[in-house]
Image (cartoon, rainbow, N blue to C red):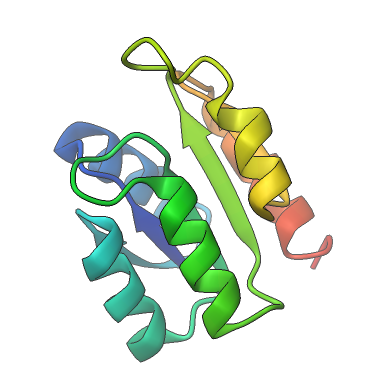
Length: 123
């Protein structure tokens, strides 16, 4: 069973993504901040990481950089709803920072699952 780490500071979104992934038979590990997500990554060694970009303290772009420092082969999907002004280009920036997929919130379950499938290399 493939393991997916989901990092998001919004409890509703975290729970929604977890439920969608578990219904598709993925093992899911969740974290509510970039730092706790990085700790979970070290422990769980997930196959894919899905991270929100707009979070307090440390944002998703910083998390992507640190994940790729820990493992240059990390498979990261970035998600964002845009949030505060100044984050309009967050998803393209995430691609530049190393995310292999991006999702604009809100997204339907099939879009999430297709992104995870692509991130896993179609496996």
